[in-house]
Image 1 (cartoon, one colour):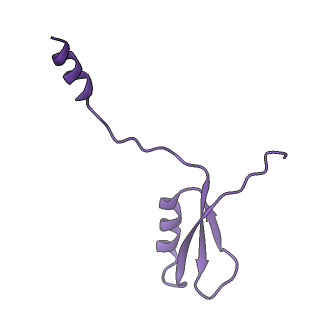
Image 2: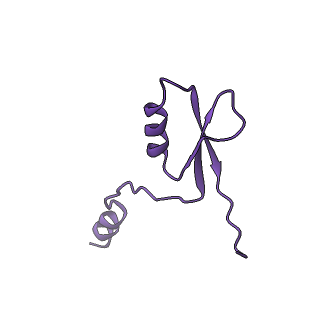
Length: 72
């Protein structure tokens, strides 16, 4: 009986969970530019921006760690 309980406990269901991570930002930059044209907290929003303006710009999405100053 103890083995059955142990087996059931170890074979529990697992799920994949998506954790929101605010430590990254997505910068949309023209390949020939030096400054970002837009900044997003969400990659999907950055991708939508690139798709919207792809006729006029050759954009790339740069993922960078967001720096927040705790003293502010």
